[in-house]
Length: 443
Image (cartoon, rainbow, N blue to C red):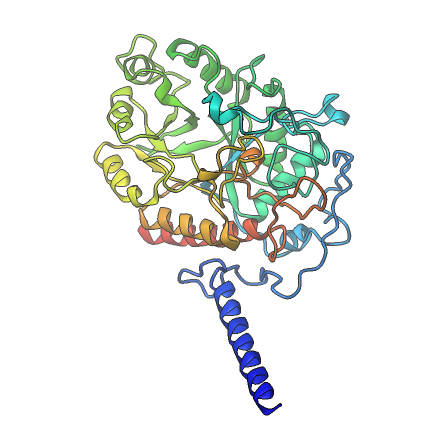
């Protein structure tokens, strides 16, 4: 019996030791502090005790979100963020914003939430994965579930709620994904008519709007001129239209150009060099044009094209040359040498297996916010003056900082627990303040 008791005591001590090690290990995965007293800022502490069950917004498309009200009795906590001392928007912090979502109430059907499962290019690999489309509202094309449910980008209350979130996060500029009128992405509808709604709502919260020009069909130097002219003439006088202050004292609209490498540097030069045949320089439609940097070899092409800067977009450290944090210092040096802006893109994580089930190797786990903090720290340490966030609401690729909530049932969704739905807005807000302070020191 004594031997049994001794064995029991030893077993209990061993179990206690294991539990202690597990607790210490889990705590190490909290968001990085990085020279800030609190990883989440004053009054923004995460709920580290047993998380309460967060009610889900009824998924009848979330068409009736109340303006400036938290959902389900305060579980959303956005109202709390909004009631605190409101941070000034940081216009050096940009977030990529998507308006391609639709719901039956506003659009007659679900759009993008029913995204198809994309096939792998290798038929042998594709054969091992499911096909078909998602079926909202319970089954959506995302690995997380939005707090607003599968919403419509046309819903004014949803747009207002988004602007509240962006302002609470101190994001100063949203870069709206844009296709020319009548054109669309492969899975959506034309969205140019939503831009006025976004501009009006953004202005209410002192947020500015830039344009993220997508690789629409037939994009070339000639129709790019016409489309930039269209944007400037139609939206350029709006108070929320973003203009970047250049080093020469000019105030010019800023355009992100996605997949810019698809067009040759010779053709881009016709638009972006002063001597080009269809040059936009020194015209009323001139601007700051920012190219997507994916591969190392693209750097010389970007200079030869006449672009004004580079951005990296992908929220996947190591996925491309441009998105790899350890390359950012050298990219920044290259940009400085060639008079280019360097705008690294940071994100809270990446997972797109809801639409690309074969792409798990590119998943980047959020690690309770640590991945996001690491990216932001890398961008600051590289000396970037402007930082872009991938993304506010690209739900298909799991890179969103928009509020997400737990959702039971099938399929199984990821969530932000043990933190609350606003955690990535809170982290963004903290770093916006830090980025502003560092920029002020350099002036």
